[in-house]
Amino acid sequence: MELSPEEKQKIYEEEKARMEAREKLEQEKRSISQDTSVNMEPNLAGLLCYVGAWITGIIFFILEQKNNWIRFHAAQAIVTFGTLAVAGLILGWIPFIGTFFSVIIGITGFILWILLMVKAYNGERFKVPWAGNIAEKMVSGNIPDYQKPQAPPESKEETSPPTPPDELGEKVKKK
Image: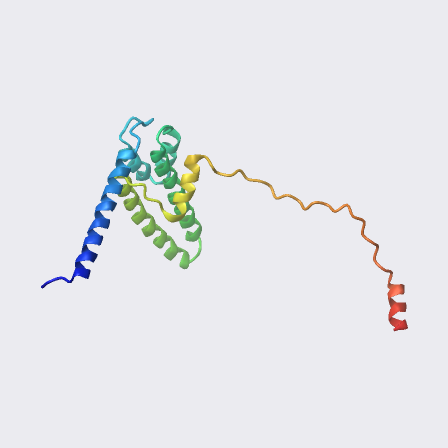
């Protein structure tokens, strides 16, 4: 079976994209700083951030001060598994349906747990869609402080007093 030139071109482009993705992953692995506060390989520390879910995330987030890659994985573990734990506890109180949702959250948490440990050990900076953004803010320190809502400014204009009801009645009668 002979391939057409278009098919050959498509296969070539797909293989080129795969090779570029592998090279990008290798570059990312090389760019990870080896300097850590916890005196272990960054990929191993990244994996350990997830081993005990949010608890080990807190431990590594506190202990690791030099390597932002490890701090990212620790923060993501805190946000991801902390949120799943709270959601599972709250939904577990709802009769019948809550048990179902708690099981779904548990399965989702287990799958994320395995996936995130493997990705961290392989040196990848895998972001869970909502938790990864929060984790990046935690690592960079750009978490905005809570600001109380401001009261609307008081207007200093004098308002005219309302028209007394008698005058309104007379105007209606005149028409």
